[in-house]
Amino acid sequence: MLFILSDDHAYQAISAYNNKLINTPNIDRIANEGMLFTNACVSNSICGPSRATILTRKHSHINGKIDNRSPFDTTQVTFPQIFQKNGYQTAMFGKLHFGNNPKGVDDFMILPGQGRYINPSFITKKGDTTITGYATDIITDYTLNLLDKKRDKEKPFLMMYLHKAPHRPWWPSPEKFKEFTKKQFPLPETLFDDYKNRGTAAKAAEMNLLTHMKYGHDSKIRPETIEEMVNVVPETPEFKREFTEPYNKLMKHKRHYMIPF
Image 1 (tube, rainbow, N blue to C red):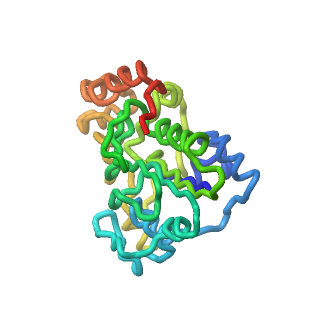
Image 2 (cartoon, helix red, strand yellow):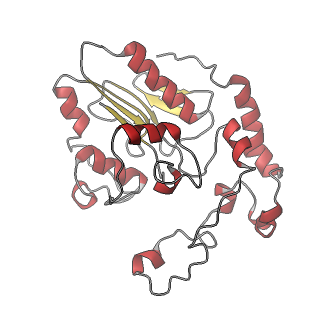
């Protein structure tokens, strides 16, 4: 069993549902060869709680992980433990976002907390390590390495392949950044929604671009440049320091890191 999870990935950004924003051919292939959910709900979509629900098969009010701050009761049985007990080789690579030593896995490589996109640190059974590269590439390459080279092919396996992407701050890989800075997207119908005649949940949700988006963090530009956003060129000192310079270093080593374990 290969369990693939992307983080905060809206259905509008999966072209199997609609390709007006982006094309996701590999995800679409899974949909074409499997099942596409067109009427599905989630009990708690926040990072940590969603994973707690997946792992325990319990709603948040039962497993106790109601938000990213509340602790997770580690005495609860998670489904990888059940697989492991029944002879499966088990592994978990990527973002967990609560606790850093998952139970029931023979091998793990977990981003501490939210993790970083560029040159991320990982917690592993052999200690902490920092790997040069882009998080999505690294998690993918280590997963493939385990499946192709380290897996005991005489045993059934459970592989938890858990991405940080596309969770904000939306730091794309260098080639994707080059592509999407020039791309124009259609404006959403709800861009200027005044929430009249809408339910309480819609009014209370912190999803408004004007009042809730963290421009300095999410867009990599300073708050004082908000009025100039239409014409902004990503060459501010902050952008160069936090985005351009790390990526220049990253490109020199991209996909050339060693897999030490």
